[in-house]
Length: 253
Image (cartoon, rainbow, N blue to C red; front, side):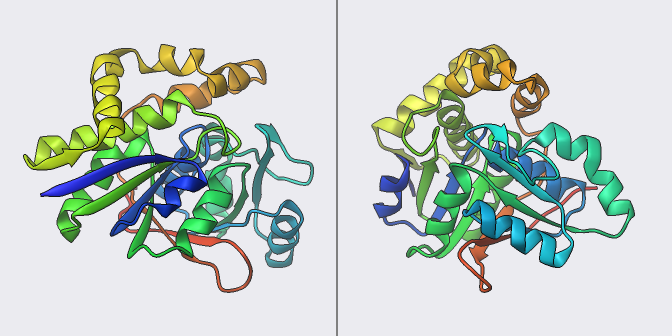
């Protein structure tokens, strides 16, 4: 029997569980999943922009950074899965297998999650929902907390809730005894009723409208491709400074 809770923002960290799954579909968790699937081995998530810039420069690493959805000054790439796809291979070909990332919502939430009382912290999205579900079942966890970052850690976002529903759907397909709260039931049925039109749903959401306006429609397309990436990003506390270290538990080439 597996108990699944879906929570929001920093308040979600208070819900005790064996494993926390942090979700920030547009775009942090999707960007990370895509980067790890390409072959990047380590991603340093640092919430403070100046510290992220200094950390990246001191190690000669590319910095992916945004401030309220816009590419940050001093960043090499935006927090964008499509930019990672377009430019990531060049870094890999030059022997650069690590990235630094700073975002407005997902990185601060992940940083707090890795310092909370969870046995394990994962990053989930629409693109890796099935891989996340399979891994959780393989570990035998029975209390799961899916935490949606939302916009600026304050506003509900439809895409995060959808991704939570996708993970619950995959769990339910594999395990008959999944116990859901009302949020879990809502996310599950919302996902099942809209999975054939996710792109349009994402476009109409708060984050989707912003990304369309600033020219990142491709990120919406990538995020709407459910189970397109077989990677499980695991996060641990970063020893050097406040932040999290993200590494892949499973990666496809």
